[in-house]
Amino acid sequence: MAAKARSVFRCTECGAEQPKWSGRCDACQAWNALVEEAPARPRARRGAAGGGARGGPGPGPEPVRLDGIAADRAPRHRTGLAEFDYVLGGGIVPGSLVLVGGEPGIGKSTLLLQVAARLEAAGVPTLYASGEESPEQVRLRADRLTEPAGAVHVLAETAIERVIEHAERLGARAVVVDSIQTAYTAELEGAPGNVGQVRECAARLMRFAKEEGPAVLLVGHVTKGGGIAGPKTLEHIVDTVLYFEGESTLDHRILRATKNRFGGVDEIGVFEMTAAGLLPVANPSAAFLAARHEGLSGSAVTALMEGTRPVLVEIQALAARAGFGTPQRVSAGVDHRRLAVLLAVLERRAGLPFGDLDVFVNVVGGMRLSEPSSDLAVVAALISSVRDRALPAEALFVGEVGLGGEVRAVPGVERRLAEAAHHGFRRAFVGTRTGGRQALPPGFELVRVEDLGDLAHRLAA
Picture: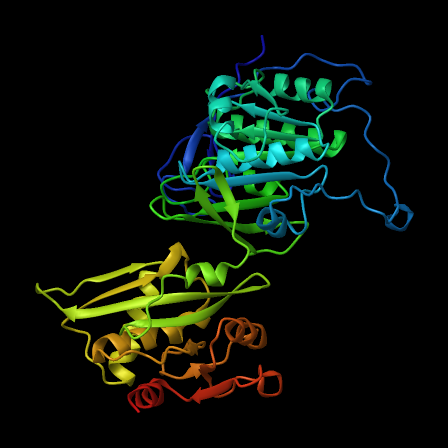
């Protein structure tokens, strides 16, 4: 009698397998990352000709030389949502697997329903498989959109085998699965959403996309830490990972590519949430600076490089006398550890006291600062707030701040300055070794600063 298969415990961070649970993964040392994975049910034996997207392995393709493959690629599916196509690198690649993650209520389902409606209108047969809403509920959401979504085929199904079967029967060239955490396969034990189910369902959809050619778009839930729920291998399986970011209280949403086999990484697309759906924002810099008030202290503007796109954002800082013994350090859009470093450097190298001040820093529009080029703007905003003196309205601040207080050059200055000049800026504070003297926009001035002491002196002049 065959021994009964036993459950194993798999790490959600690195995918390592262990026979029993422990508090820390032996492979990657991550705490509380091991989850139980039920064993797979035994599959019926298939003949040599069996297999396919839903079955066991059959006779596979023969190896070919790369120079023997036709160079002409299948055209991408363009949705007409300019920001969505831009983030993907020009449109949806046939046969690709795209994962879209984000907080609950951020607009993932709305965005993909709009994408499905536009693809169907462009002549691309599309199946929208919803495991969280009934067709009637999807219809209620579709009625609010500006895009006519009546031609989209909707399927309320969570069994991944039936989703693939209906997609094949329909001849769909694009399939939306909302969400991968609600999908399951009958060949695995366990509830939908566990590690084994998510990994196996994603793997089957990946084989279906690669063998049959349709593009598959998955909705993924996120954990409280901001990562996509389920095994880390889910992000390795898919071709593209998109994160939908933004505060639910703000109108703007940011779609960011953290992985893209067919385009640039860290590209962003900006959308505006309206009652009629998500509208692409053609000029993100203008949107983020629209509510800026000139003449206020504690406000500085920097230029971020999001992939290949320069984006201007406003950074606000407020330093006030602490009302309690321990001063507060509150930041939104800025890593709190980076803020602590900049405050320490300011106090030590520029002589500005922050030990008895509450400090609040905010990046307007829900953007998050991930590159060090914004250090100089954060520092300038803090200096302006402490002195209660407004910074020049037409000035831009771009530079990395070192622990010695020195201001370092950053890459891509020419494109940042060109974007700033387009929006009326005429001066930029940068590090002394910053290039770009020959590529300055007409009438633009570079103010080169050596360190934070030099910056504080120039801002006081």
